[in-house]
Length: 318
Image (cartoon, rainbow, N blue to C red; front, side, top):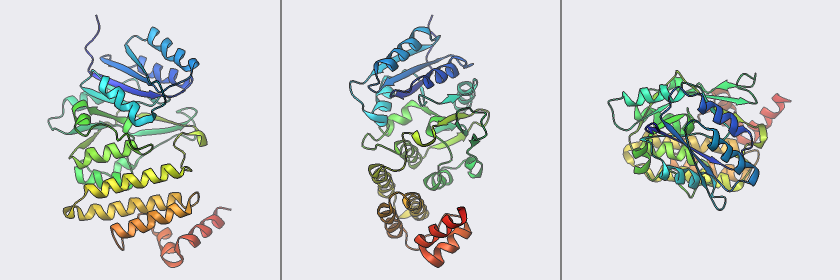
């Protein structure tokens, strides 16, 4: 007899190769069994389709494979999976990432025992290349600096995301209330989702007994920063945030300016023209905002400007 489905896991998959078998193994080993896995095959090749079919055949839990007739990218694929989900709670998991064996159980116990509405649960993100035990692996510890209050979390996340959206367990209804992911975005759709939830009053509770293992592939990661279109969509997310604010959110305007400033710094080497768009926008949103970088970098920046700051940084690194 099929167990009641409480959690739906959703994975958009475009030719993930055998990495998805490692993801599958981490789900097979879960101590919590009341879940389904929805794989949204985003027009993968035949070899990968056979991998998905094999997983469905041998899995000890329900696997639903949805096949897109063409490549629809992340936002649309996630929303397609969300509409088919049976569980009250939703978790997104990338096709090459991992979760520890008690992950679903720990997060479910925390969210089901919460007496507050508009609550989601997140776990720390463990970033790794190759193996989770490699010397390059590290945990994003930014979450330790944040209070469990909506405004504090929102201000922090706008400037420095302190968790990955796949590390979260959401209430399905909360995602539907904001219409899921923005299908007009080709990047940063995950951060946009979290910020819209926070703007609606959501608070994220920490589940520190589990981790989300986020795999990096050096420079081959799909979300590389050298695409002009992706920088434009990052700007679009910032404009969406600005349009959601009002005069009562005066502190958030400076926070948004700091986010824009950070994007300007990130884009400077690969797209100097776009970086100046970010800097000008930041100054327009909140004139004379405080830089969010370290104090030494900011002193140099104020004295000699952005161009010279990067030249000095390059000389120090050589």
